[in-house]
Length: 119
Image (tube, rainbow, N blue to C red; front, side):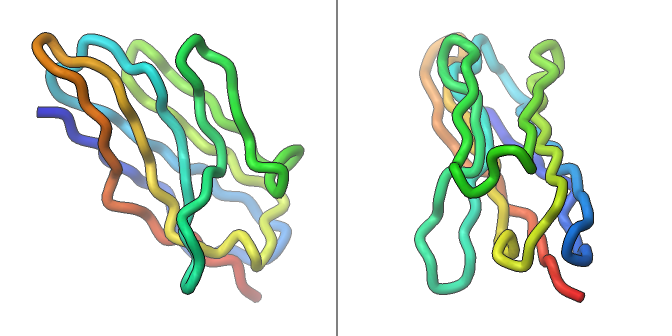
């Protein structure tokens, strides 16, 4: 069984920074896609940034130049460094990963971590 555990959310002032972490654990053979989505109140869940199958990165236009996704593949961990945060970045941030175990494939979401940008 594969699980995702997120950490790093919180309250920050506009212009501040936060770093989110997500660790995938369990009987993982390979991770294909791993990254971050967010959902603000009353809005659809949207892509923030993720590693695609093959290793390329994909960012939402609204975060380009401010957010950076990185990873430690040996530890099945992905990070999201968020700089120059804006109130409109306030949302629940969800980690997503899909890949393969020894005998099946998986696609799952973390429980979410709240990011609030406010003065």
